[in-house]
Amino acid sequence: MAELDVELVAADRSVWSGKADMVIARTTSGDIGIMPNHQPLLGVLQTGPVTIRTTGESGQGTVVAAVHGGFLSYADGKLSVLAEIAELADEIDVERAERALEKAKADTDSHAERRAHVRLAAAARKN
Image (cartoon, rainbow, N blue to C red; front, side, top):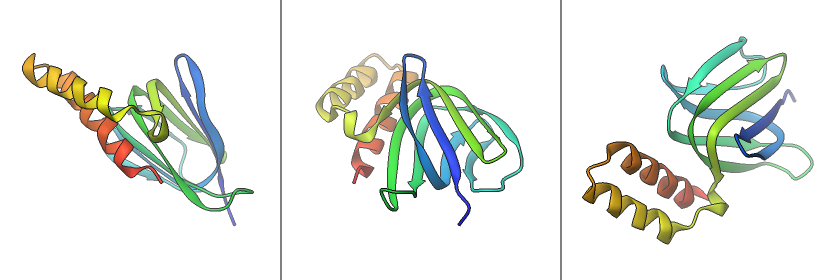
């Protein structure tokens, strides 16, 4: 079975790496799904969830991360997701994200509101 080598990296740390058979991310061109043997690709990430369908020694599962900006690159079976900010669903403090959402609404800050919505959506998808 063909697999992708995936690495999800934020500006301050390595967030996740492993094998996957599909990754879905939001780019400036829209949502994209990347599977093994995809054409080489370079894309600009938008604030949105990244869903990684994992394979390998630990079995099949799903990893979800809230990603805020960055790039993704695919070539020769390797996908690099280079994010400005990335949080795995398991790391998200839901109460803090809800407070951030309320503050963003009160401040009419649409970018902060979008980031909070993405964090809450990612947290809701965790296994």
